[in-house]
Picture (cartoon, one colour):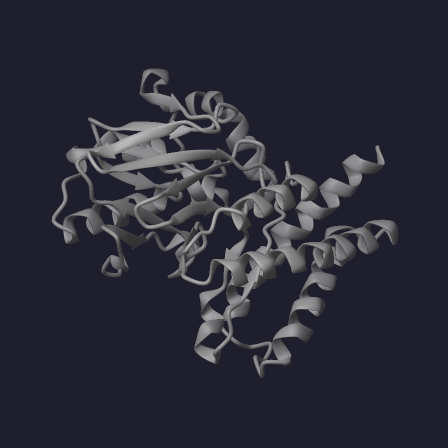
Length: 315
């Protein structure tokens, strides 16, 4: 099992790389080392052994984990929660109210993911275990969670990527855990000297208007940091949020053109690739750059979400 040492992000926050999809730097679990040991995201079940190893590397015990917070219930963020909970007997799982029942009974989650990921589902996500209802806590907009005497987290309802999405604001670091609502940080491009962020428009609850409202809300918070679900910390939140906002209409245009022309998901995917590739070439990033290893899957999933959105809107 390939692992990496946890990344110290400052402010008593560490990031454990879960090697989601077998890819380093794709999806991670944030560790808040406070009186009540708190994790944000679990990733899928294959990431759980890496989370446990990462906790050991930090000198922490899984039995001391008190809270596991999920920004949303998509399996690349939350699929491993049931499995991890077996190793964390004192932990409770915090989730949006619209996600609670799907964690308690994950059959629909599994069905939806099989549609998206097909034959790769078992390798990427199995097993997905139900979570007992008495270990699930719902947090709504404005709710808080005290994790130490001087650290209280604040929850925001942040739809756009999914209806069951929460953001977690940490006043101690002036940072927010945005899951996928504020897009994806493609840190692979930073070695070429550019900051690169794109929206995540995956199916089946993508709502561009809600996404833009959530991003605008983030912009008004005077943040100093964003902790992305994919992947890591940005200390230039204004630039990140503005970039995601500027790409959102580009994604919508690509999806709408593919839909109107009857090109389907393949057409939307091709159009997204062409738009992004043209942009990256301006920074001398070629089509065989490692960032495309990640973009290839994201174009596929984003295209599916865009076509699904325009299908629903036309019906």
